[in-house]
Image (tube, rainbow over all chains, first blue to last red; front, side, top):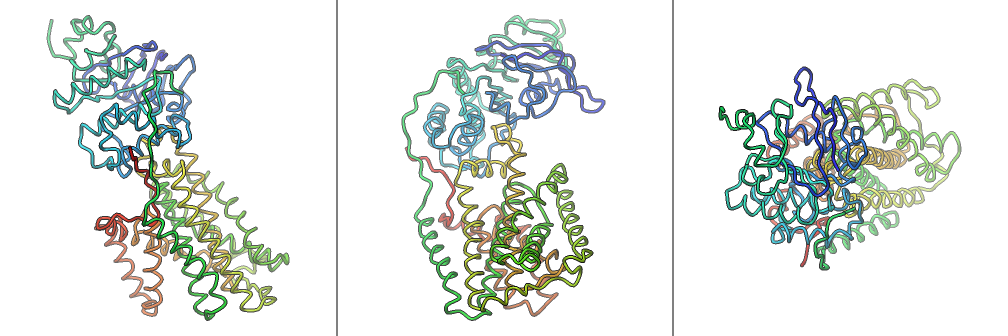
Length: 237
Length: 336
């Protein structure tokens, strides 16, 4: 479904991602790990179109994405959440979803109402449907990020540290929700520092360090990799 | 679009109108009817004042759409009002076209001018965009001042209007004012209640996030820029046609931008109600205190600064904190 070939990104002399090759199959959940500054969010920005790559190509369902702006990628079925939630603060929770469902989902507004209400129910946000998004708690903002990305029915979902800053209980609730999304056949790429959360859902993981891919494979095997333990957990073999 | 298993989606009800909105709509229709009846009972001076107020509302609402929703802070909208007004005078005076038809035809001019101007300026951010629009307005003013065909700096008079009686002129201008308010205020309301209103409001709140949710922010900004140019142009054409005279300093003066900014900031940026409140405040302040000249302008400036610093939502923002009764409801409320 998604394939990166020789992908690179530099900001001036600062090389953030270098010669990255990876792919994601349909229906798969890929976990992305790495220390701060490894280039994980930059990778998401390249996939969603917020940034343009300086090298390599990104393909989605066989089509090269490089020249497509973010709105077009959203319309292709790439949904994303942001590490720091970016809701439309003065719009209600329900209206936040309507934007996404109507524009990323390319639907008439009236046709999206039932679906958006269903997504709000699924994400346990229905009781806040008419609350301004700026007034939601952190957990509900995170849920809103996920709900808004789900509203248009994405094929690929990019989750950027969705469990960060949550309590164990809140994190567990969110993981249950992501499992339900996965079970409906949505392909997921998930950046996360809350390891038990991502490992409980991911079928495969990749690890980045200083913009380079250092490990790839099943979650347990990746975590047992001495190089991963050294750079990510500070454990010397 | 979705290739995933669908969620169960029972039908839901969404409410988009409120009692306050219906009351406001009735009052609005009454005000439009009153405006149309003015030529039959009001004095010429009153009609001229009301025409001015209508033009302020239209120009401010267009600026509100630009700055409040599209994030395009322009201080050069007078380029479009001036160009449209000059084209009206040229069509009517030099080509003999009925001046009221000329006003409608002149709207092509700001639309055509807006396209290259946006192409030139859209890559500029924030203050650079604002300065760019001001430069464009100044360039258009200087060009007009040096073109003999429009009588250069001396300006033009709309002498063809003498073919109409004072009451006929008043009827024509009042009808055009009513249409202008319906197009600018009513049109903005219709836009905000449409699917594109969702996109505009999302863009106002967070343009980066809006783009990631499928909104073509660039195209929407372009369309708003052109629409605002046309709306501003209509106000300029009507204003100067009612004055029967136009000169470059009057048509392209920076005070047009100042008035729009004052009205929107005082009333409340990003709301139609705020524009109406701000326009009324400016209109009455101008009527009552305009004679104090520079002192009056300084007070207006300080007032704008105070609102910008301490009352970001303007007076409408303060009102909505007390009572939730929008005149132009655009919210979609989910009723399960």
